[in-house]
Length: 520
Image (cartoon, rainbow, N blue to C red; front, side, top):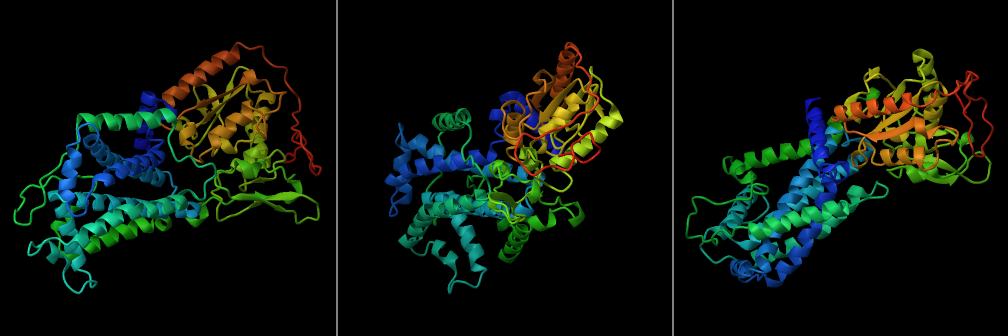
């Protein structure tokens, strides 16, 4: 898909500039929240000097404050532009990555509501200034409202200049500009309510960098203040903020009814995105399931789930203790639970730990790895987009849907089964398709997080790298470097039969890998 490839190349370019940890494209959602914080802080200062009875004069007074008001007003203005840009980037990324349907529907719809509220909030702010741009926005909005059978008399009459603008109009804008942030907070809560361990703000360095750049721009280039709105003067050229007033030239060229129809169609397309963007029923991944008999109640799958889709409940098989329970309405089938389960009792159908061991057994039977050759395990959605290949830079390719779903027993089986080394290639941690898959996988391999890679596996033969879908060149360099390092090692003693055991208390398994069964 061309847009996804373009996004991958753009991500790779920004990774080179900033590194994956501080790539602003990966942080578009948190940057939007940061801008909201900046807007609240600067807005509180501006409201101290704003007067409903003299809106434009009070803004002029703010603009005349060289040491404070002028750059704070500019920062408020530029932060609003940056916020809508960040929201737009975030929405496009989520759509292109298929995160707009199923369990993510609530996040998509609440995100649209956030965008609408934020947009209307910004428009009220421009109207509050009551310059020529604010009057233009108010007049065009009034013209559109007059087409609806709501008011007893045309709203646009208030802007005809026959009488002074009513104070109630400015009070209404003032009230909405203060009250709407409460709605933003509510929908922001809904937006992240189905996520575990939510991070609302970017990393500290990126936070201060973004804020610092905006402050510098606000000081060097203060926000312009157009002439005051005057109904007796026809403004032939009105400067507009294209982030929030882009719609005015479009609606002005259309009858009010046609403008409402266009807005309705666009809104319907966005709101129904969870319906028309979802895959066909036969292609939708199934939610995780649990084999209760094998579950030890360790809670690790519940802790690791990025979407809070797994809870611990009382057992139904007559034994004491708790057992994991998957909510299919919340599960996105990421498979991270499969990688966290030592007894391999949970995971999406066909991708549990047991299924993974069956698959790796077939892989070894088919390819017969050698001690001087590497097996590359890439995320099929990232990692240089090499998941569809059989070989890459001399390494055998063993793709997985998400690195977070990879059970460490697969890595152990590959190393003990004859591979010289295993290179696990994940998406950048800040851009993991399933939020925390990269982080959990690294900790399971090298930091003893359950289900950890066993100590008997030579860590010199296991490596972990991060690469986006557009970073094939970087991944190639890592593969070549790791292959060179592996060939310098003393070849391991071959094992005639590999068995994978589990270091936890559970009901006895019927078999172990190496006896021809699915594994423990």
